[in-house]
Image (cartoon, rainbow, N blue to C red):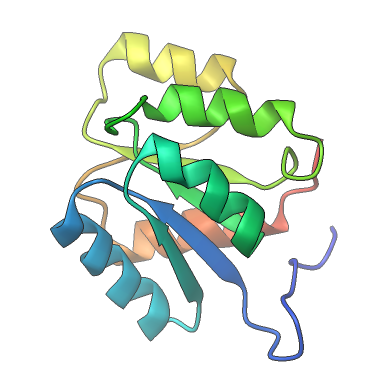
Length: 135
C-alpha cells in the first residue's frame, strides 16, 4: 500500500470542502482542522474549479447540491483535467436515494457520505481516500 499523500514542508494534508451551506462548511472546516488537516473552501460549482487549480488539495469533499451547477458537474469537470483528475473525491450529501447512489458509484466515487456525517466516519473515509492508489 502506498503511503498517504503529503503536502509541502509541514506534511499536513489539504482538503478542499465544496459546500454551499456556510454552517455545514464551517462545521466541516472546524472538525478537519481539529484533526490536523489544512482546509480550503469553495461555496459553489463555479468557484470550485478555480479553487481546485489554485490549492491542489490532496482530497476533495464534494456536496452534490450546489448553486451554479451541481456536484456531478464539478466531478465531471475534475475527471477531464489531467492535472487534477487523480485527486480523490468523497461525496457528502443529503441526497441518499438509490438513483443518486448509483450515479455516484458509476462515476467511480465511493463511499457516499450521508449528511449529517459523524466525525469518526468522516475521518475514516478521508484516511481511506488519501491512502487509495490513483487510477
